[in-house]
Length: 377
Length: 215
Image (tube, rainbow over all chains, first blue to last red; front, top):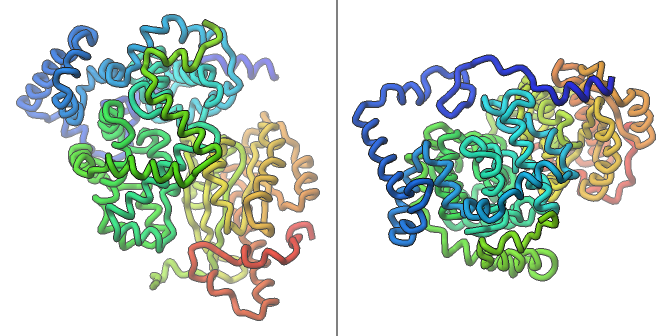
């Protein structure tokens, strides 16, 4: 009995029957005329514009990314502007690796990923397996039991849990890995996770997943304060109704909007997130609240929570939401709030963790593998 | 705050759903509040929330249920939700012995963070997977009696005993609350009818631990 089950566990399940998919590979929800229909009737001029855009991008990054660094140094503002308009989908995987610094990590550590996947064991393996079929369950790539999608998702998460045994595996990381795997190979996705969590370019994300979830607590506290300052009427309403950001925004930070937001929006947020950092998560969060402000301030507790977890479709259109997000200036205030938070948490573990973060921020990518030495090297 | 008729209720009870990851907490909640079961459900990140209004002994009771992420690391966030909860549904998976073995850790978690007189119900979920059962009903029943918890087995998939589980815990909470309001000479404390969180459990911390279920 046991044995039969064990064998079953490793045999791929049936290939899911072909269903209607959207252009990103998600099974379509039963709601007739969505935006996809519109895409089909795109005018030819729009099509041409898209092609021009791709050509511009190709020129900017060069063959396999060879001109990228040069271009970014010369014209950082152009790069930023173009990324904010959205990276062309056909180049997204490559560009994400370039802007996150993961490409450099990959090149500096040949063979490491394979080593982690094949020869190491992780105490998180069962936890990872349990969640595999619960990660993007409506995406065709991840639907087949033990199919290629689920296998690569498992490999990336297991490799990371070995690479950083302090973090191991935490629910939510699967959505990061899953999103990346739709645009790049396992090994590329792994190094992009490393770049993000260890902070190759921006503030390290690992605090979102470490014991005590210290960075989640910090971001939620900062977000609560921002709401009070930028949307005072709503902030007051939240206080009165005793609604706090842990009731609706944890997953915004833990999965960078990849858990439950429409995929086209999540992708556009990720474009900016990888280039500009976590600030965009705060900005998008504030923009969502601002967009729905007049409705939200009228709602009592339960309806309020419901609304904060189910934003209307028009609020989640990237072409209106993102410009609104960019217009909300938060950089300086975020730095101050971070400082205040660190001071308030004061001595003890919180402080130690923060100091550690600072060290990692100033650590350039070339030294990253040294920061987290791999015994097996 | 004026409430529309469909939102009228006599009592508002806050209940938390806890237990190891993957035991079916979210589907128990969706079965009870929306009569839905999702085979393709995602793992819960942080907390989820839903409500349903039911009748208990002629009173209209609104259950405000917080569903929590099961992974241990998430307790940093989820344990804040135990505060003010009048009931806890502690769920394990009848096909996974470790999820039952961990029940004692969850009880400790409740003792550390929840109000001392919180009503706890042990739930063995996934009884539809008959051929995979690995935790005997008698074992769980015995454990529940020893710990003074009420106990039931459910299948969220087949909608078996889900209604009964929630009705039972809400009934138990109601009996404790109504007993209390009788003995304290106050009519039903005002906080219960209007407030968002129920303060009654916290207000009576010096009352000895009631043994509501073992009798």
